[in-house]
Image 1 (cartoon, rainbow, N blue to C red):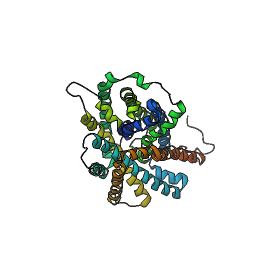
Image 2: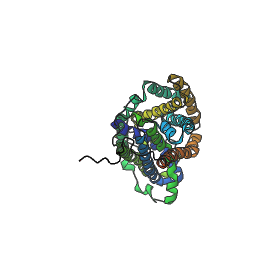
Image 3: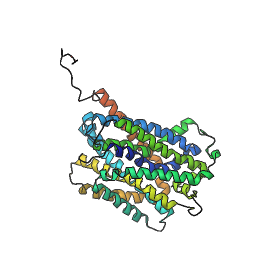
Image 4: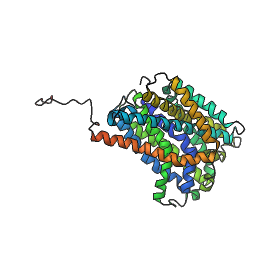
Length: 376
């Protein structure tokens, strides 16, 4: 890949790939299953996902100039890599559609209620198409700004709702049992898998690949520290029973916030902060879908892929989002199972086969000829 990003931009990219959907939609889906333990389930998911991100980073570091499709070719053969490229293209395309709905549902349900839903999907989708046409590295550079905006969202939300926070809403903890909470952590992989597979696609872009494992670790810790705040405060302020009733639970949370007497509601401010990170998420997903098709098909001109792919998945975003309840059900199942299978199963499979084939050693390390003495 000719386009390059630096390690700081990579660090800030991972939280942007998960934050928007996690606080707004995933928290509500998880609360429908485990109630007030949603934050515990999401923490378990975040811990597991961080381990898999480290696995994906380790694998990519062994094939530093290859995407996950290219090094799967080396590990499991061309036929597997072609199939994988097609599967990942569909996955990233659907993830792009789901990401579109993250921001359009915020707008449709709380601000632009009379605007046709397809118009919202089209306008936002075209913004992402423009971002991909500029080059995904240009959009990833906004990750730093997006991360700052997410911190501002968290700070203002906590300041505006702390007086309404009730610890009793968090109790009883582990009411459904730790095993049930662990099972419900599967819903977090709808967000985590985007980051896991994005590492496999974008790792060759990093201009300096030293200590990328450590960077990935601290990036994921930072991401889940700012994500987990939301289900904790949403449960403490709204209560789990109220959380279950809303598709976009974070907007209901900010409606409960009052920063000052003269700024009683700040949904528009929240969305203006929130959109930066979601644009990074959506654009990276669209780019990854396009690049998968490019690698599998051999088509060199980006526009020949970008235009039909974006048209298909913008239409799918409108189709999925029209019935909000069906969209939530889709994210609950089968999307969570698909994401878990790809996000966890694929890196572990490639790691295992690469290890068995002896492909994880240091390729740059030269063997010394027999009888040669080490220099003193």
